[in-house]
Amino acid sequence: MIIKNTIFMTGGGGYCGTRLVPQLIKLGYKVIVYDKFYFGNYLKKNKKLTIVRGDLRDIKKIYNSCKGADIFIHLGCISNDTSFELNSKLSKSINMDAFEPMVVAAKKAKIKRFIYASSSSVYGVSKKKNVTENHPLKPLTLYNKYKGLCEPLLFKHTDKNFEGVIFRPATVCGYSPRQRFDVSVNILTNNAVNNKKILVFGGKQLRPNLHIQDYCDVIKLLIKAPRKKIQNKIFNVGNENLSILKIAKKVQKIVQKEFNYKKLPIEFQKSNDKRSYHINSNKIYRELNFRPRYTVDNAIKELCYAFKNKKYLNPLNNIKYFNVKTLIKRKIH
Image (cartoon, rainbow, N blue to C red; front, side, top):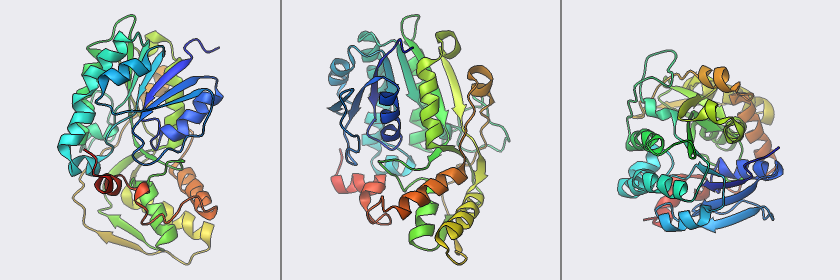
């Protein structure tokens, strides 16, 4: 039985949001999506879906739009490190400066639960084999830094009537109606299928990975979980911790089989991306009984299926699949 049945979601038009929103509607929730839709709107019309085109910095509009909702899911941001460095003032104003006023507005609007998607990249570089939620945050970029700095700003405002929970997802991979080809597994698969070679930047960096369906499932769990189990909690959410080279070899093996290619070459280039960490996600299993069900292999295979079915138009060069290229083209400010 759904007690809290109206969800307000920032970034619902993004990579993860467009896969999640239809699933929430199917479960019976009413969903209000608040998004600028920089990359297009891939959400199908539905009587239970309300679309609000708005900027995350427009706090008054957010307040007016979320009144009457029960759950606030904050996915919206200038996503990933390269997009952030492109225009650091823009990104700071959206990812950091708007965050606490948004939380205050949500509380004022009588939202019952605020779910914040942080990032496991807040750990930066760590040689520990199992990085838990208590590990010091050592961000290497402004994107990582502000993701982490927002976390205590949510808990600063929580109380018995305003619940807050944070999850730190690993690098997401797999198919979405609003596809991205600028995250590791998706980049490698796109190049293998369409460029017939796999370009690896660095290779030794460790990356925790999370299938996009597991990302959706953990949010559905956080919506329904009892207050005492989630209030002021932070959860790592990841599955396979793999080096970029191991991901590349998985892509090579699967794509060769799916497309009957002869052996795909793996080419190496130097990388200035030094992020490397190995997260431990036992806490969310121990406390909420959540364990990811999908793998990097699943993500590669579903992307292959999408390529075979011509789901993408010019996937190597179409800017809509690449955050940085789109932001440059549209001169977002």
